[in-house]
Image (cartoon, rainbow, N blue to C red; front, side, top):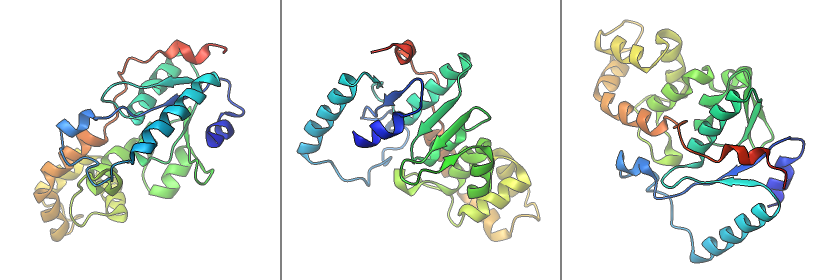
Length: 219
């Protein structure tokens, strides 16, 4: 509650977005987030009280059954840009960096760092538009998303610099492009299906129905 109160300062319109498991992504990959421990029973009552307090404080709270907060953020970004608004997303989730553009930034609540176009490239070595493909190659251990064996951040950065996107990388590997080492070529060819699954999991939905007009209501 203290963090939400801190983060909302200085912004004209604020909404809180909330996960609503079970997630639809489990239908694509049953092991999705399976490594995470179950929350204790007391957590659910505490969380209910937190949401009750946030709503009582006048903030819009959005949740869509089966969807994750990231998808709601992506849907809200689309609506905000339709309304010609600048957006700051407060989250430490790397998935959301794919939404960064000239009018969308991501704020890390943990460090206070603000990520725009230049900051994403400086930290991750790729443009925000390439973050989806970078995560598809590397996977994401925090969500139990598989990647291609042997491909970490530096290799993904180099591959995307040479071949622009995942499709270009897969095509180059199958053609045994000399810019890719034989070992990495073999790994990419063997992991093509896993990369495809990872991309489906990391792709954010921006078509969710959310009560967007609530964000403008004065409460």
